[in-house]
Image 1: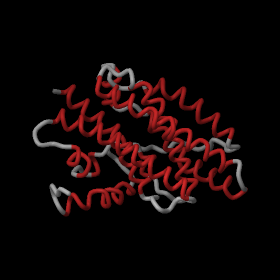
Image 2 (image 1 turned 90 degrees about the vertical axis):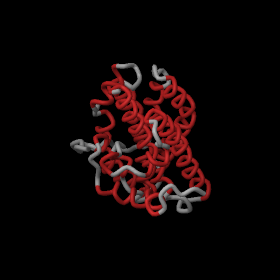
Image 3 (image 1 turned 180 degrees about the vertical axis):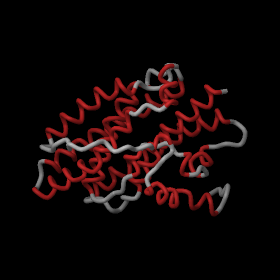
Length: 252
């Protein structure tokens, strides 16, 4: 039973990351800097929600009873979400959107490549299906990062400001929780220490190519993966859960 609970919790962690970032990107629909980029960001959002459905459908199957993906997505309270704090951060401007996306994409790619070899065949299948999307996401965000960093003086300044503000949240991605440790030891979850080495190499190289600088700041203590969130998640959930809360079990 404990193994099942840990697996469900791990699935929620994976799904919540994709759901919260997917929601943030959905807020940009119709607000991109140009039509092509607007459509690209919307499609990336849809990619994330496709991953969410796969994780939550599997979690609902393990939970049994009358659980389904919608109840898992919409009927939990704030402390029952386990996404990284980085992904809650607002769309202050286009530079923030790109830097946040880049910092997560580089991590997500390494994570999925490990999960493709998970002993849990369903997780391995989800990761194998999602990896092509993730590689495109990283290519998109890294190319835009370099365009902003090497662009005008204003775009460079905004990209650096976004990096200064958001980089402090990256430490949490590798702060191994008890559930992540157990999943790693069982061969189901990823090894975050191994991911961190490759992650830092990727982001340092691309940040240098964008002529930006890694900020010399103390990493912020963030515990979103443990259910302790910034106030920003409350606003996200207010929008995300409204229809399901107002009209329980509504069907289209």
